Image (cartoon, rainbow, N blue to C red; front, side):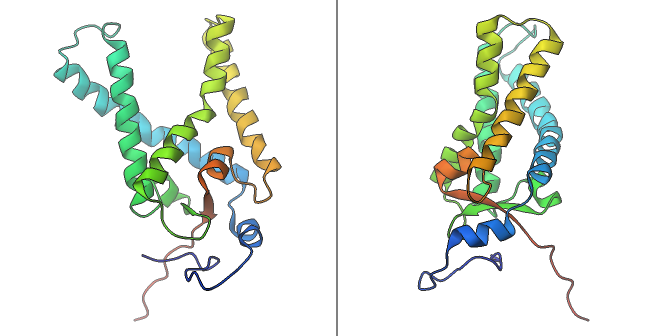
Length: 187
């Protein structure tokens, strides 16, 4: 497992992690683009999982069994993120954008920490979806605008953190870092 060059890998080395994080934290724009790309990848994951669920549950109509489907997708998405975050620290989109999630000390995430990060990661959407539900918004435009405003507000919270990390990362003791491109082997 390669370690990011900006982080201490030996516990005997004491380095102010805030200074290191400020130097290697990807920009907010890059992280939001990666999030968008993650949504594109997850579209395929959700489609395949939905197809499997429909076959297993013998679902004949899209509006029947939606609660079960939602719970199934919550678990499938959880497995996707927890697996990738605890086995290398990068999802498919994160590999593309060379971003890695790791603990503050530079070590990789345990499965328990990855689960906590996944569950807290829903803070991106839950407040906005709650507003949609409470306000009784029905039009696609108002729902999309509310969710986008919620995502941008959540992303803006990173400016309150000294190392510009998102809230769920600060709560989990994790951080996103720029991950260098692999070097070609010398011939």
